[in-house]
Picture 1 (cartoon, rainbow, N blue to C red):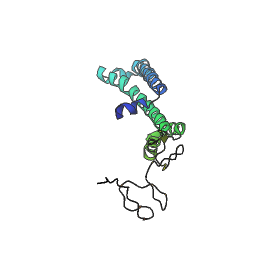
Picture 2 (cartoon, rainbow, N blue to C red):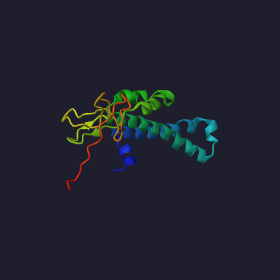
Picture 3 (cartoon, one colour):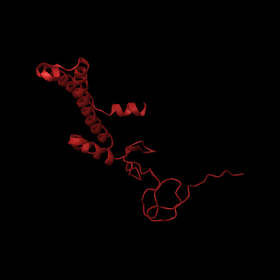
Picture 4 (cartoon, one colour):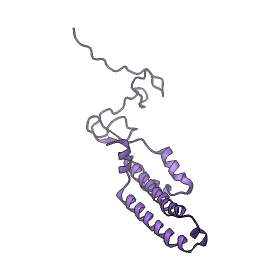
Amino acid sequence: MSQSNQNWSVIPRTAWLVAALTYVALAAAVVLGPLQFETELMRWHLGLKLLLVLLAPLTVALYVLLVGFIYGDAKRRGMRHVMWAWLALIPYFIGVAAYFITRHPLPQPCPSCKTLLPARYVFCPHCGTGVTPFCSNCGKPVERGWANCAYCGAKLRAPEQKTEAS
């Protein structure tokens, strides 16, 4: 499954349903309300009326889908998904921006038992397998290929090289 399809599948079905109902209800409200009784809007060109009927409700429906995405994405990342969905409703996209700035990395499977683990884990709590390399001096995670720990400066052990017996 491609990355784009995975992102769309994060949105719960309920959010899709609410977005569709919102779109239909708002489009009907625009057609039956302002377009029928506002004399200024009655004079608009047909194309502008169609844009109003199609795009205004679409904007709100897309916002509903964005809140649904934040709910589903926060849930799969092990974050407080209900709280983030409510915060996404803060005006001017403040909650949306805060979510995308502070969201956690996606959980990664343990190489041994395949349990999904938060990215900050160094060891799997289920089987004890080392998930990421770590500094033996301070215990903080390090990246493969580092010669020294970026946190305490300790010399890191080089990965063991397998040599062939001649």
